[in-house]
Length: 103
Image (cartoon, rainbow, N blue to C red; front, side, top):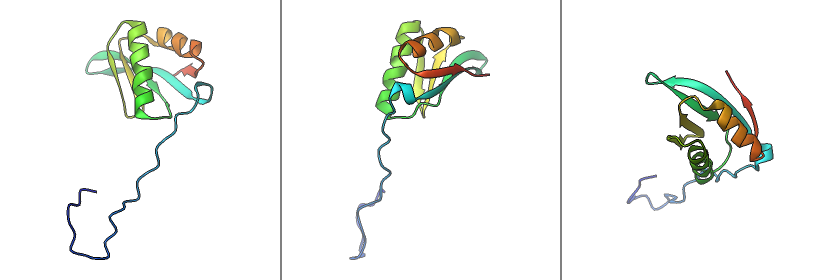
């Protein structure tokens, strides 16, 4: 909201914030694992995660560690460096996620 002070006595300081997104259980997640070229390099993308940023980061960290590569997790997408679609798909299915290979 970024309001420090208002001279309006009727101003409502309580902003209607968006409710926190609840992380769905792995069996209810529908993830798509696909390959994308980013900056001339191949990256494995995992789309469709529904949940909090902390849970997204934790899943991304797990995938990066298990694949032994770098990457990032932000804006509901996990990006893993390189073509690791098969490895990521196996890890997600083993963890109970409903995942499929995309284009």
